[in-house]
Image (cartoon, rainbow, N blue to C red; front, side, top):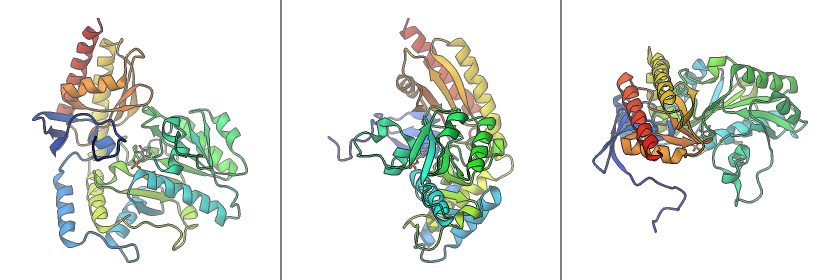
Length: 394
Ligand SMILES: *Cc1c(COP(=O)(O)O)cnc(C)c1O
């Protein structure tokens, strides 16, 4: 019996220190961290620029309320607006809150435009949007909704990739379509540009909004600042969090002027969101993400890792049935007679951390700062784990 609620099946492992892409366990071992706190530690551990920004800010000012001007927040919002489709940003503390804000903005937009009956959002099977009551309803995964009472109303789910079904699901009460450009928890399932264009077209045809949940894909994870920038298909609203501040809790909801102008003082808010400490770290993370060559490295390391994965998959066909993903958000699908959880444990024993995902996939979301040595070291551990697993199972 522990004093924490039994909400997690924790691995019997704790860490005392991190440096770059490595974590040092209290067991005395060093681990290559291709989990990165689930795509959060985008600049690795203890990045000097983030440490400096955090400590400098910590000595001056941690928190003031959004009742006052917060210059660091205004500056960060301007930088996000300059780098994306968006004209305005709202800051919160987590991914689920960013999605909640996106949903509220979408509903409010229609209410302000004479269609308050438009409150429903169409989502896609395999989606994950967070763990609040509204976001579990949006995700529609029974594992997360069961036992929590009647689902929050306002979500309709359609098959992944099927535009006809999606268009048929849009009715007079629909406010928005919401998707992850690459589903993370769902098993690293990327949406192609044609599908995204179809979503945009449907939104425009029916006068509704397109929301991207880029909480996992955002902030350089796929090799662009945001994944939508690969296709050029812009949303009206975008939710972000995870890698936004390199491990400091922070989230953001971005929107166009047309949509965000539906918001007004007092109708939405947060105590902690966008406080000086969070914004100092978010700004510092952004400095690095925007620095010359940073995203090129993500693209190059992605290509190298994918090549290694394909080689490993080719020599272990009984274990790995698919290599998938974009940028440094990659997955290996494990054969049906084995489990991704077992694979993840075997990789951990080798000294490599990863994250299980849906469809029996193990997900690799390393810090974006990795170089060829880390890619090759990870590949060697995966190959070794596969070889051992092959011989275990005869
Ligand atoms: C992690 C995640 C969320 C939820 O973020 P929290 O910070 O845990 O609330 C929502 N959507 C996607 C796509 C995610 O990956």
